[in-house]
Length: 405
Image 1 (cartoon, rainbow, N blue to C red):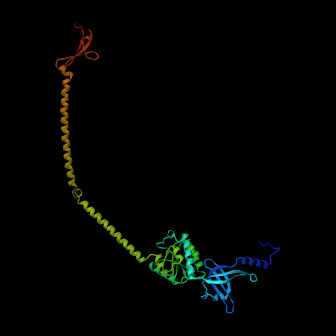
Image 2 (tube, helix red, strand yellow; image 1 turned 180 degrees about the vertical axis):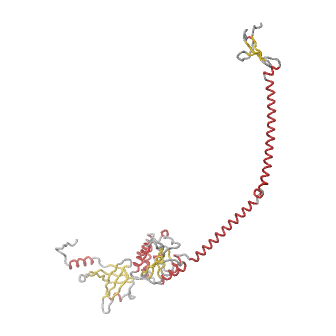
Image 3 (cartoon, helix red, strand yellow; image 1 turned 90 degrees about the horizontal axis):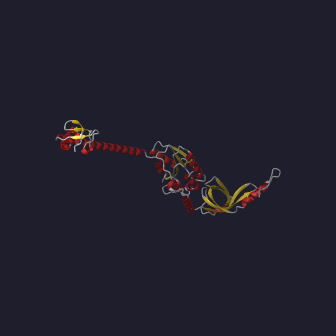
């Protein structure tokens, strides 16, 4: 239940301190892992003090222990070491301070660290942070390169010197950070995020020289790996030597075996590019010369053809062919006209032979009534009928006077 209080009836400090101590005491004894950032052990005192820090966050815990615990360790405990502490938090009401009292201390060995890193690697890989399809290509010629590395380190000199040797105009924005120790993770993450937010930065290089496995643990930190995977700017990881593979190498878009190799990856070699441009120019020149030569041969072949070598001769041949065709057409036309004339003459003879005029020319005549009809039967005529006699030449009007018996 919440503690009831008011300005008129405040709660004494001892009550609040006791309640805080009770609440903290409920946590009991727990195992805590961290990195030793401070170690205080004064001669003649049985109690030693140290500070455990979480490398992934700005959090630390003050630990007190008996000096015998430190003496029992196989190797002397030093700042920067990773340990596992079994103890419980205690609130000292008299001083109003919180202290974690340790009852057992175990250093984290290389085998345990490797096992934890392998488990973390599998977890992050299952989430897709190491997938090849999410990796971005590096720009061909970055406007500005962001470099996250140790202050005045050899890694910085290697990256910058090799990059400028290849492309002298390359520009760098260097973010000096701690690359080992309790503050390294937070500083590297902050530097990467600042560079990623800068639109002028086209690629980011995270570089560190060689070191022991414990020295390179910073670059296998889960929070750093997730921060790098969330970046929009391509990341190049250049940690340690070629055999060193921290988890950062899997999350980065490109892995450089060394800082020197990173300087070669981020920019092209100006001499190689000039040689490539020269080779392309020569290739283009050869292609154009070859095309011109091919077209010249084709043009020469066309010019040797008869139609182009002697155009008038071709026309003369066509003119002779045309005259021959025209002559054949004239003869065919005349033959057709002659045949048609013969046929017309034959038809004319038949028409003349069958014509009534021919009958009239032989002495016959034709009697026509007034309406133009021909009188063929005498019985059809009556006295007084007017007829017209049609002779071979001329017509004679006639009147029927009487009918013969």
